[in-house]
Length: 273
Image (cartoon, rainbow, N blue to C red; front, top):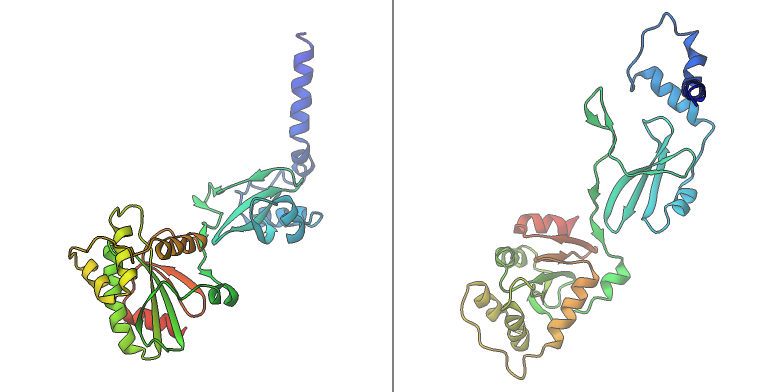
């Protein structure tokens, strides 16, 4: 048993040092270069010349994990860099040349003390024209030009302070954009327990004035028989289907979905873009 162990150890060392032995004889008089040097990168790409991975093949390998958008050789030897997208979130993962091992990253360079992996990004969500046209304009309170050719859809909560701030800017926007119709949809958040009842009352009366009273903190009447739940429930389902989980949220005429309050000038620029 004592004789076997040294033999095994030598075999492991020989195996681990096989690649180094090839270059050792030609590198006796050269200095060691840190990973990330030009010669090191040249070696990576030389090694990569006999390996390939198409976006289609990567899509099959990563099926169920996200949509593969791009594939390239990683700065790290023996890895592919795969850009993936899931919903509107895009990130990079790594796949080894055997196409069996997934490395989620990030990967850091110890020399530069920086990440070699691009950070995840949130991509803007843009609805197709068909999806945008399918959004019902009913169950909305209309601001601006009711027959305007430009349409802006806003999801708002009567107890949301950011929605109140946006509402003031929307009033300025309809003056700047006389051909704009703004469709306000009541989307009460669960974190505001009284917002659901207020939304029912506002929609039941189809009243912009009541919405502004709610924003100002005035006491609202209790829902009556004409203040139905269905219109509010349908808007909640619609918002959830679009991935909206907060207010305010805005759908621009081109299908771009944005969140958060913006000033009138910024909104006007977005409408033009």
